[in-house]
Figure 1 (cartoon, rainbow, N blue to C red):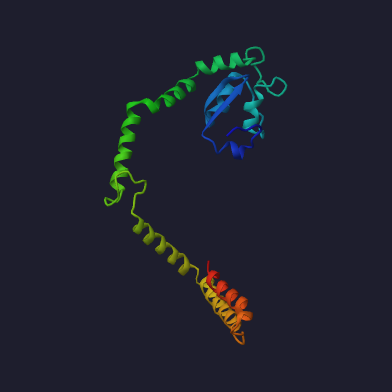
Figure 2 (figure 1 turned 135 degrees about the horizontal axis):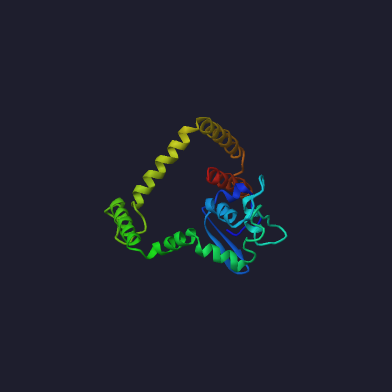
Length: 200
């Protein structure tokens, strides 16, 4: 997601953070390390402020706060902040994470996952089926789940059945004294149609 001025509640939901400044990545790494990284460069976090505001504020001279003692040696532009980031251990850690997809460990874990999926699959299914269980088994599981839901809320079940009985009496009463010719055709058709679709 791309955010600006995100609250701490939203900020705490993400794992990694990327801060861009004039087209340059000045930070990409774990969320929990972002504040410490910028504080180490001399930018100050004001208590009670949003951490995301602090991270985006380092790119705006009018908004950023400089910690005491760093007034003369903090990085002043995107290139200087990026240089500090590239020299930091977080950058190297993130490069290793990016290279994981091409590593032997990733290939081994992928193969283990494929084997685990094959073991969990119903042997009666075709090899290239996207399902792990057969169609009849899916129906059995879903039907059992539906019955459990119905029996778990018996008040609603009784209400529905009572309402069905009342509707049946009302719809049945429409058939009394209906003429057998074409005049009663519309009433009969409507009652039958309503009875058919009532439970859908």
